[in-house]
Length: 113
Image (tube, rainbow, N blue to C red; front, side, top):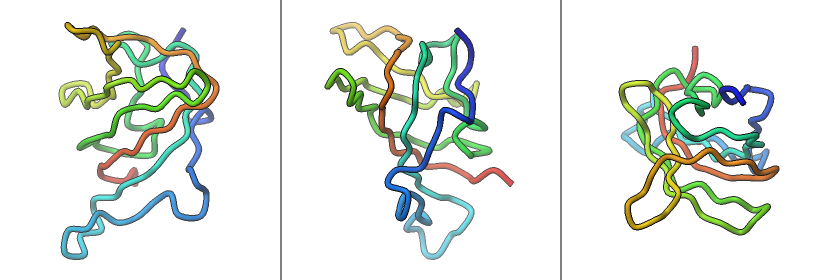
């Protein structure tokens, strides 16, 4: 497995997936809803990085919804590595790598220039 490739990321829905973050017209921060095809990414080794998602800096993210398996994975932004880390949802959550053909997440950050 390896880091998520940009080719595995697409906007969802395609017409309204990106909008400027509602912060008094601040166009340096955007929110995107994305569809990801994961082949074992989400832990600290096989990462979901900002560049693959179209961002230079990640600020926050929603949970990840896996439509293939009808599961929800808690997700957080690792501010040190600028990646998204997925958790297994257990009582003491641990990072988990997810394999799924259709997952969805909403991400807020600075757009890649």
